[in-house]
Amino acid sequence: MTRRYFGTDGIRGRVGQSPITADFMLKLGWAAGQVLRREKGRTRVLIGKDTRISGYMFESALESGLSAAGADVALLGPMPTPGIAYLTRTFRADAGIVISASHNPFDDNGIKFFSAEGKKLPDAIEDRIETMLDAPLTTAGAAQLGKAMRIDDAAGRYIEFCKSTLPDRLSLHGLTIVLDCAHGATYHIAPSVFRELGAEVSVIGGTPDGLNINQDVGSTHPAALRAAVIQQGADLGIAFDGDGDRVLLVDSDGREVDGDDILYLIARDRHARGLLDGGVVGTLMSNFGLAMAFEKMGIPFERAKVGDRFVMERMAANQWELGGESSGHILCSHVQTTGDGIVSALQVLALMMREQQPLPALLRGLEKVPQALVNVRLPAGTNAKSVMASEPLKKAVAALEQELGDEGRVLLRASGTEPLIRVMVEGRAHLDVDKLANRLAEQVQALLK
Image (cartoon, rainbow, N blue to C red; front, side, top):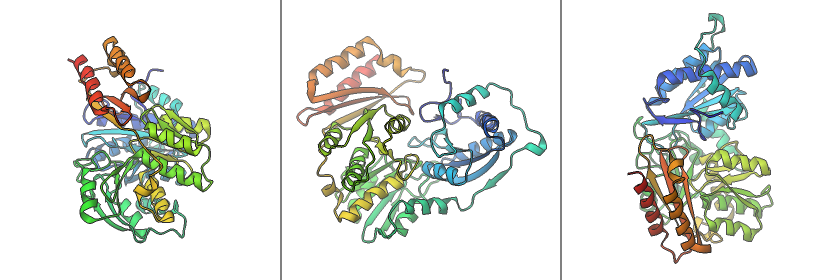
């Protein structure tokens, strides 16, 4: 079926514009409740959110819709997306709902669902929810209405889970860390995790006010973290995005360590200890140098389409345990069912403590080639796929590919979460990939006028 609402990462958009409105969320909660009740009978659904001010409104609307459908609701409050996945499993709930737009600004918001197993809700269930949205909203009988409760110790439960992903005897004592919580969902959890494991921690981006999530901080704006690490003389910095499923690191000299670097470090460590089950899944955006490093180590590597859903699909198909994206969305299925920024960072810190080496030394086996990414924002109502299918743009891409030969590659793709076309050019060190990417981005921009 053609989907009207669900994309690759749930439903997302601008607050107050369809479908990110209070009335739609009421109907969405009701539709989800109806589908889940028909599937499972009496149903309980967990709801968590990030720190956006609109989360209050949508939490209440979803709760009302679910209750009207006869589904019970457990409210988690502000909670990282992976924490919601974990608690959905441990509470034996039938589904979890995340209210978040991840790394987007505060005036965006979105909804995504987790299954009872803490994984993405199957497409078939999402399709049935979309179909149910067309039905008239009815209210269950008074005796069948769903009840709501708040889980007061949700943060503590997730903190203990994160700590449990490290060996019992491994301590972070002696490490000085700057955490950037993006004024988002990790603000009250990440500092406790790393402090309780023994690290000396300072925090930036840890005072959310509902409006400042991801504003000049977090994994999409690492400049603030770089400055703090250098100023404080810290061993490293860790930056999360607004909902805590992505992570980027900064070494002691302020150099950024992205998702490709993190994926390499985790894979290298598990491979060396004989623990890596199969190979690694990256994406079309993964650096060519990462693929070459894995080839040298004899680790199988595959590329999936961009988006954690597609990475997970390839991991499941291959029965591999590790995958991720350059953006810092890392999937460590040996410890967690979904991307988890805190857990991924802990995997790297465990390696640092075991080998007593700083990040630059651990990354010496990875030689990435220069890569330039330019985002072209689309006017409202513009179809990204139509733009990319235009003959002038296809010819421009073909000409650039011929110019690069076997020393580089070009990738154009539509963002799955924002109205953007992403232009990526990658090539050997002697190529000016920034100039080439900007040239192609200008040709995309010219088609929008």
